Image (tube, rainbow, N blue to C red; front, side, top):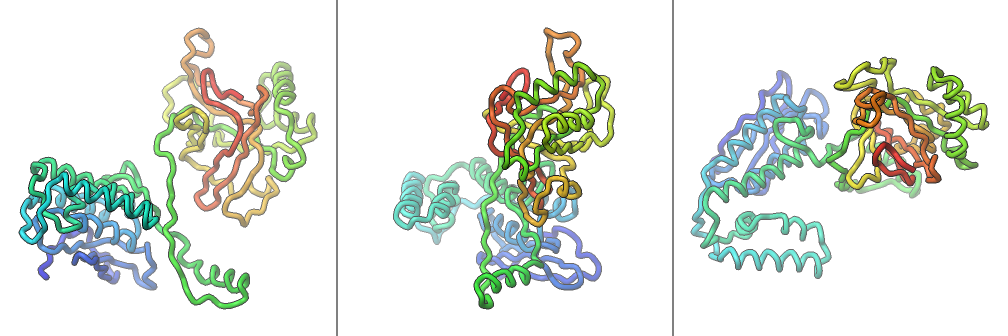
Amino acid sequence: MALQVQHIAPVPKGWKVKTVSHKSGHQARIAFPPGAQKKGSGRLVEILHPKEKNPRPACLEIYELAVGHAGAPEPGSPSSVGIAKSIDELVKAPVAIENPQAKKKTREQVEKIQSKAASFLRDVVGDPDKADAIDDMSVEEYADKKRIHLVNPHPLKKLAKHARRAAKKAVNRVCKNRKSKIGNQKSHVRRNLDEIPDVQKVYETFMGKPDKTITEYDEPVARRDDFAHTGWLVFLVVQPYSEALEGIADPNDLSETEREITDEHPDMATLKLWEKLSDEFGCTFVVVDFSNSQAVPDKPGFKTYGDGVRVCGAAGSSQLYFIGGRQNIDGLLEQFGVDEQKDFIALGVLVAYGYLAAKHIPDDEELNEVPIVWQHIMGEEGGDPPMIFYDKINKRMGLAGGTYTIEAPGITN
């Protein structure tokens, strides 16, 4: 079979090249550094296409297959730029209308066949994933998959649009960063490939016999994409999980006592304030500082602050997120009295948090558009404070539960 070569990136000196094949006849050449060829450690260097005129889905699938072996390229790297250029060339290629070997059907007939196939897979076979995959195909893609020739296809421009949409889907599964030149990655590259021997030991210890099979699963990883920035995280106050199990500090009493202390000592530092509250209530409060010792800006328009962690709200105004920045608190886990070996760690109850924002409050000249560290004691209005947990693998914090809402003038619960 004659193949057309698309160059993606140069082969680094000393690296070995491996070829990965697709059932369609497409091939991908991947360079690996010296040593063991670990999946995810390579670089995509070439794509080989069977000589054809139309951008079939297989042309796009080979990129996803290749990156699955090589690993997602860093945004802006030679591989990233090369993939972007190749996909761009692919979707702009001339589109062939005729396929004399294919069965002839109208668009309406193919749509009915496609719909029946999806329904059969979902309702009879019980495979919703495959059914969804068929539903996601355009009529042209499904017809091409089934070798059906459309007698009344879309014009060339619309066909090209469908090809670009297919390319976008492939790119969304391939690349890592929304600011990358090739899009936004929705899938993830397997990590910790060298843990297989340790996992085998776990199986042998638990089951009492050696394992003979390794099965690889691709778990779905879905998360929100859109957030509203409400401010920059300055500090967190947490009552550790082990202590909170015996009873949490009453948020209403905390709020009242905090106001009394603040009124008496308006310049008291946050850490000192919560140390005093800890003594007053006989509780442990762990204060985690994200200010990175930066002073509060004296005017609005600041680009970032402290460790660069954003406090964000999701659609629906019912969930807070900590997005971006430095959230690695591995070195502080001892203070929470938790099992540091877990992947997901319940730190405790989020008692309070502070964030920096310059809010638009036209009715108050002293506060309007002034950078201020706002503090919220969670549950101070009779609600329940949320739990805070730590994802040790991704070095990210998250909140679970609680009755707070995100509204004017701030967090309410």
